[in-house]
Image (cartoon, rainbow, N blue to C red; front, top):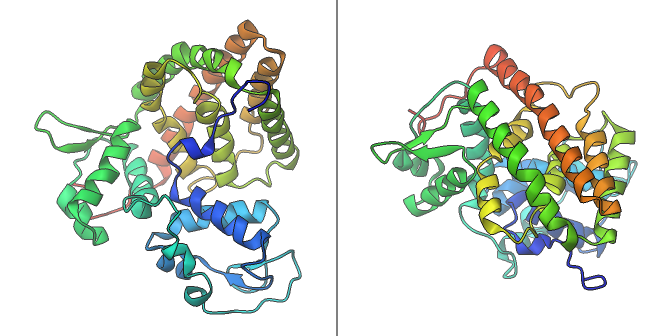
Length: 331
C-alpha cells in the first residue's frame, strides 16, 4: 500500500502453475538453495511436479529472462550466468521439496491445465468439437473431478461451453466471434480500467512502464512467455482492482483471444518483426500515470481496436498452415 492506494496483488488471484514454479525456483536460486551450476531440464522438473512440460518450459523461460539461469552447450539450462560450469545432479533428490511444499497453493487440475488449454485453443480455430470428460480424465490418468475442474476453468475463459445436450463443446474462434469479442472489449475494458485506475499506485505504474520499455528495446529477443505476461499486466492485473466485479466477470470470457497469442506467437508462427502492442501499452500506462481518465479510455480503446485485425490474421494463418492435434478426448 502507498499513500492509501492498493497495488494489485499477484497472490490475490489464482496463479497458474508456471507462475508458481517460477516464483519458487526464483526464490530458491536467489537464496542459494539451488546452487550455481545445477542443470535444470524440462522432463525431470515436470515429473517432480506431476505436470506436463508446458508450464515448466514457461517457468524456465522467465528464469532465463531474470538472468538466474542460462543456456549452455548441453540440454536444458544451467543455474547461473553464461559460462557457469555445468554439473548434473538428480533433480528429484535436489528439488524434491517442490512437490512436498505445504505452502504451495497447488491444485490437481493445474498440473495438466496448460497442456489441455493449448490443445483445445488450437482446435478452436478449426470449428466446433465435443470434449469427452471421461476420455480427458483417462488420457491424463486423473479422476473425473480433476478433469471437470480443468473444463470449468476453460469455460470461465470462454474457450468451451455446454451445448444444448449439456455436453462440453469447444467454441469456434472464427472471424465473427473474434469481432464480437473485440466489440465487447472495446466497450467494457476501457471503462473497467478507468474504474481500477485510482487503486493503482504510481510505483506499480512505473514498474509496468519500465518493464514495457525494456521489452520494447530488446524486441524481438523477447520470449513468447514474457510477451503473454506483459499482456496480463495490462488486461488482467491492472484491471483486477476494478470495484465493479460484474464487469470483470464479463471480461474474463473475452480472455480466449489472449490465449490465442499465448499458444501461437513464437510457437506456431514466428514473432512479428515489429509488435506494436508494446508501444500501445506504454501509451495506456502513461495516461494512467498522468491520472488522465479520458485519455486512458481513448488510448485503451485505440489499442483494442488495433489488435483485432492482427488476431484475425493470426487465427487464419493457423487454419491455413497447421493441423489440429489429434487427441482421444476431442471428438
